[in-house]
Image (tube, rainbow, N blue to C red):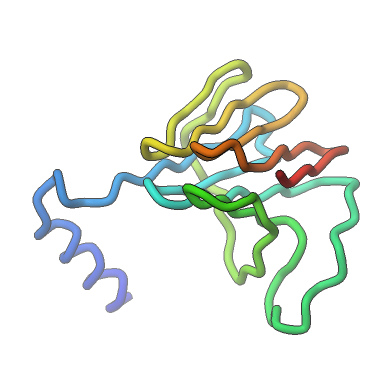
Amino acid sequence: MRAFLVVALVALALPASAQPLASHFRTPSGNISCLGDANFIRCDIARTSVKPPPKPRSCAFDWGNAFGLGRRGRGHRLCVSDSTFGAPRVLRYGQTTRVGRRISCTSRRAGLTCRNGVGHGFFLSKDVIRLF
């Protein structure tokens, strides 16, 4: 609780132009949820038939259903101990949202695609996970 309070107080003390803009949304099915800022987006998928690659030895937490994308690099799997689920905002099918100036995500019935400014990203759905 104390750490949360300190973060909240620091955020309130910053001018609006200096505060990081966060984007938190989910797909209409509720199967995918994302949280990001101007530099990075993370998306989690609850249900998928795609088997993840073996868990790296360096990962002490959950592996396989969380994905990250920065402003320049390729999309990649993440080792995580939390979740992005709980987003109140729904990114409707056919809609695209920008996360900062260099990352965008598009929701479609087929799945969610997130891309950065250099064309890398990921596609997530129940049946397909593609990192590029």
